[in-house]
Amino acid sequence: MIPPARRGGALLAEIEAAPPGEDCLRVWWLGQSGFLLCLGGSRVVLDPYLSDSLTRKYEGSTRPHIRMSERVIEPHRLHGIALATSSHAHTDHLDAETLCPMIQANPDIKLVIPEANRDLVAERLKCDRAWPLGLDDGWEAEVAGWRVRGLAAAHNEIEKDAAGRCRYLGYVLSRRGWNIYHSGDTLRYPGLVERLRAAGQVDVAFLPINGNRPERGVAGNLDGAEAAALAAEIGARLVIPHHFAMFTFNTADPGECFIPECLRLGVPHRVLELGEGIVLDRGAIH
Image (cartoon, rainbow, N blue to C red; front, side):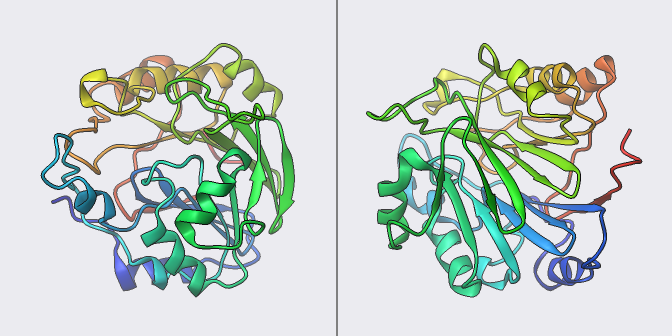
């Protein structure tokens, strides 16, 4: 399996070393679509999946979720987390074996979810139904020192509940002059580019690259070329790919489409290794 660049205690030490008052953005890739951000002393975890629950669930099925990469850290070891997100209810974005230990280790943590998924989240996490903060397409909230805005995601369609609320979201998170877009799982849909442009300059875009192949039997995402094109059209100052190198049946090689297309389009990009952290200065991203 793919070993992390940083894992366990080494990863924790790097996270803990982040100066609390700095305006630089620190980013670590936790695997799949999960990232840990640190900005001005505030730590945020986006769509973490830090267990083997899906491998066990689908063992012996027609869709075995065979891991390609080692886990970077046990979720209960992450402390000082102010905010976590779940973009939708698929287990690699809403995993009880990840979130429950993380919540127990961080009693003041806030969890942002699609409002449409409130009942499902409460059932899966065995939490108070009123506790998570629910957003919908276009809704905004101040939470844990961050401004968070929900943006519809198409996985594969823009799916809504009976009240018209989106079951799949991306999030634009803003703090200290930074605007960060985490797509969740999505394909491109009419109006996405315009709405992201209207949300302000995207400094960092986290976009999936595993593609949309019906033969896999799961909902799809942007592929590498589509992610590069979307980043170019929204004018992202940096794009970081996700949703690859986790399961053998549903992955992509960033070197095949994503990197060449970013180079062709002149899109600033960075492919992280598992557990790798980077420090970004907003004035120096290029």
